[in-house]
Length: 390
Image (cartoon, rainbow, N blue to C red; front, top):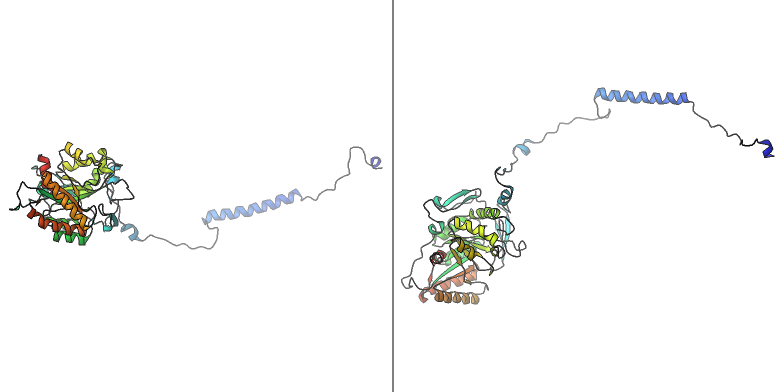
């Protein structure tokens, strides 16, 4: 039936959908476009980015003190190389409290880095000073006078002690960190004992001046890289084997500027640095050029300081005995006896000690009796002169 009623190829007619007249649709779209155009035109003419929303205008100005009174960082010298500019920056700013480790005792102590521009300066011979970017540093005078000679103390030869008899030089290092230890050393030790000061002491020049007034020769301790650096850090501006010669010499000048009136320098730690010919040689050449002596505390058997000093005609002294390697009264006394025996065998011997209270007390006691045994206590420059002339 269906095939008879429905022609072949023609399906049932589909119902027609309701359609919005095209004219009406276009009219609505045109009206909306006109409304949008009016709003856009109004916003452009009124120059109101807020689109008519309520708002208020507030003028915000920065306080003058923030800009006018803000300190400006000093610009580096335009002609200074970048590596030199980096090397001249202190590791820690003045006024910072740091912790340093005593190389002999392992004791940790906190010290505050002083500002050299604010600290009081002990008068020094201007002919022996040169102005650097860090301040005044030692130099050989135009007439050839060396700081090592100008600041050397002429040790008094005892009438009982023969000038050609055994002589002993003792160096006490680590001074200036502890006020009590420094005061003990100044009050108890005889003038022939040489004092070595760390470069981070407060009122460093004042303390060094007091030591010189009491007859002590003065050394400046130079922090140098140990093998376990940076876990064991001698302090700011430490000389490092990883730096260029120019950077280390620049750091050396910063350290030189911390005080005046010293006959020479000595290492503070430095087992890695003093074992490197490439690192140490430029530094010791500069020490020689400045007319100073170099003292090796003999804490490292790998040190090549002696060979470098000989090649550069640098007055050189090496310690023979570590006086307080074991910081007990009995062991310190034993070390002083070994020092005395070495002086009798070779004519002169050098001992190095830290500024521990026990060390100061035992050295003071030994020194009082040494003269009666024919031992003459001499400053370190005496040893340097003999080494240079031999």
